[in-house]
Each structure stands twice: as C-alpha cells, then as structure tokens.
Length: 112
Image 1 (cartoon, helix red, strand yellow):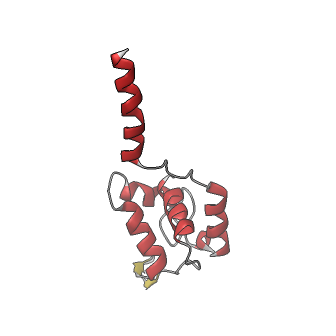
Image 2: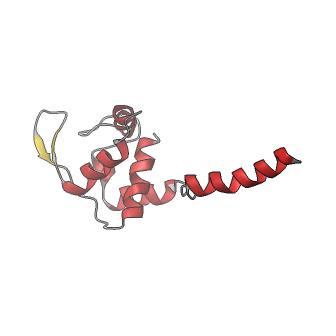
C-alpha cells in the first residue's frame, strides 16, 4: 500500500512540473494559412521550386532546439533569401500576428 500511495502522490507532481500537454498540430489550418499567403508559389511539400521544399526545410532544422523559432523568424521578418536561380529577394512575410497560428505553421512545416 505504501508504494501505491507514493505513486498517487508522484503522478500529480509530475503533471504539475511538466505543464499542460501541447496543443495538437492543426494541419488543415497550417495549409490554409500557407494557401492564403501564397507560400506554395515558391515552396512545395517535396519538390524545390524557386524556394526549398518543406521537406528540405524540415531536414535543415531537424534536431535543432531553435528550429521552430528560426522558421517563425523567417516567415515573420522578411529576411533576404537566395533563390534557386541565384538571385536574392526578401522572403514574403506571413500575414498574421497570431502567435498560435505562426507556431502551428512552423510546427507543420517542420513535420514534413
């Protein structure tokens, strides 16, 4: 019985320390945000267009602690990007200020 009472005490403590579960990825919302911002003009899931494929973006940031942060930075600040033809232009800024939408989009891109 002593072991059971220790387990019952430890479970809520573990939950309190780890925080709430992360919200599930909403692929439909991410794809809609990409569509409304015309991201597919330069990016596709698995083929490079004038910009890298989503698969290659995900591979670039795989295992990096700041990958999500970097993707959000790239889609919100308009940095100079090099296109496949060697030219450079400012990356289009995603038209939303909603942090949850940006996080969801970044997570979806990184899930490819």
